[in-house]
Image (cartoon, rainbow, N blue to C red):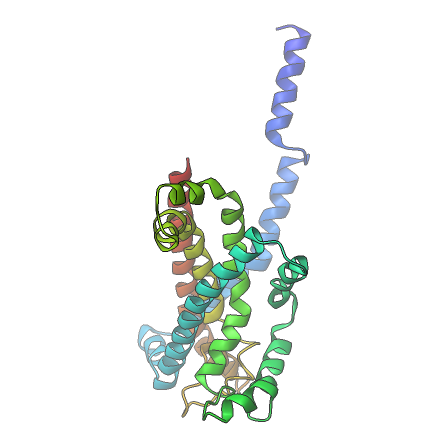
Length: 288
């Protein structure tokens, strides 16, 4: 093998290795950070949960207040995610397909729920939608109460979840050729038919991904809902994250009980992430 061939082989090897040198070092740092920030905390949940017997674990997670809290969290998160799918699709379509003054500002504001501390969002929403607030006083005239009800929880979850849907859809809409719609129109298809049979099949995988992410975020949300919910067991506004915090802040912190409930949340999150990954895998195969 001559020197020129050897140089080409070395160049290809470096290209395959990547521009960041030290594969062993970077891999070690990655595994260390992953362990410290994700794997060890998750393992601690399992460790505390395994201190309980199966009977104790089942008794904790099936208590009436815990079951109601799971129902509230999952139900409100599901409704909020469905609403986000509708309005997130409209927002993403407008931001990609239309030009108007202030478009960049509106696009940047989509990221606001990510940047804004969730506790600040919760305080602001609870005040705004209370009976003395700007919006809450208007709805109160019609007998509609928002703050300290499940409706308030849904609004808070819509606020924190809509960026997931918009950001999941935007890249797909950008890559969707306008010629698809033009061809359907030339063939005599009406707008509704074009949307259902041409556009939606292309957007469905991304829409389901955004839905799953918004749902997973909503089920475990704490900061934005803790103030607007009212945390009333009687009115059914306690969420799972509040039950966990309640156990940790009690006189004798019940770490095992909190970990048992958190484990159920963890399982739900893993199932949702698994479904999302399957959707992305099917979508990637479909586009090849």
